[in-house]
Length: 382
Image 1: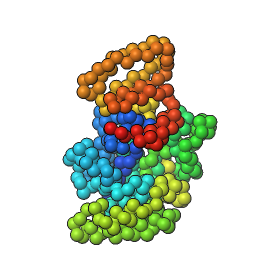
Image 2 (image 1 turned 180 degrees about the vertical axis):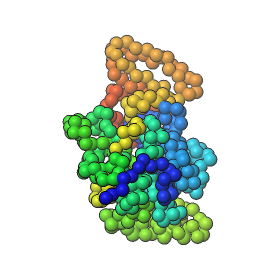
Image 3 (image 1 turned 120 degrees about the horizontal axis):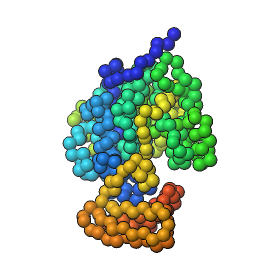
Image 4 (image 1 turned 120 degrees about the vertical axis):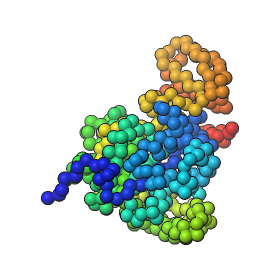
C-alpha cells in the first residue's frame, strides 16, 4: 500500500529546495509601459508598487532562502537588473548571451543548481506574474517538492483553476488521481491558447486548469529529459556543463566565457512545455486553488489584480459613453486635461513619449499593433 503523503512544510523536505526565476517576458501587450529597455519584470506593477521580479523573488522566502535563488535574465538587462535589485548576489544571476526561450533558460538554471547540489529539487517560475496568497503558494510548492522526493522521476506542474474562458493562457487537463498524495493527478494533456469557444468548453468540464508556468522537479531529471527529447540540444548542454565546471575552477563568470556564450547563442530556441512536458511520462498536476494567480499580461489583467502602479504613466479608462474629462498627471508632476466626446470603452495610456488609445479588452488588436510598431521601428524609439 502506498504511504499517505501529509501536507508538507519546509522542515519536512528532505532535499534542499532551490528556485530558478526566469526574468524574460517582454510584456508587449503592456506597451507603452513595457519596452525592450525596461521590460515587464522590471516594472513596479505589483499592487503594492514592487517590481514583479522583486515580488517573485521575495515570495520564495523561507522555502528557498536567498542563497538558493537564481535568476536567468537577458545580458542586455545587466545594468537595469542591479539598478532594480541593488543588493542581489551577483553570483546568483545568470545572464543570457541571447534569447533562447524557456527550455534552455531552465537548463542553465538546472546546471547552476546541480553545481551546488547534484540531488537538488528546483522550482522553475516566471518573474512577471502576480500571486495572491503567497503563503498558500509556498505550501503548494512544498507539497510539489514532497512528490518529487517520493519519486525523483516526477515533473510537477501547478494548475490554476480558471475563472473565465481565457484565450491567451495555456491549459492542462487532469487525468487519474495519484494514490497516496494530498491532491495530485496525472496530466492528460496540455493545450496552448484555445479559442474562446473551446476555453468555455474546458471550463464546463471542470477538468482543465490554467498552466501557471510554475514547475518543480529534480534538476538532474530535467537535464536528462531535455537531452533525450531534444537531441540537438544535448551537445549544447554538454558544452555548457563543461564550461560551468571550468569557470568555477578558475573563478570566472561563465556567462562571460566565449565558448559558453557561443554554445548558448547557437542552442535551439524551444519552450519547456514543448521540449519536455508534452513528451514526458510521469508529469503530475497539483491544482492550486488555495491562491490567486494572474500573468499580468495586459492592462485588463492589471485591472483584475487591482494594480494602480503604472510607472508614472497617466492611465485613463473611459467606461460609459458620452462626454468624459479628467486631469491626469505623471511621475514628474506634469498635468494635462484629457477629454473625450461620444466614445466608450477606451483605454488611454500617456507615457510622455508615447500615447496609446485602444479599445478595452482588445488583446489581439494590441498584438497586431505592437507587431506593426516593431516593423516601423517605433516600439522602443525613445
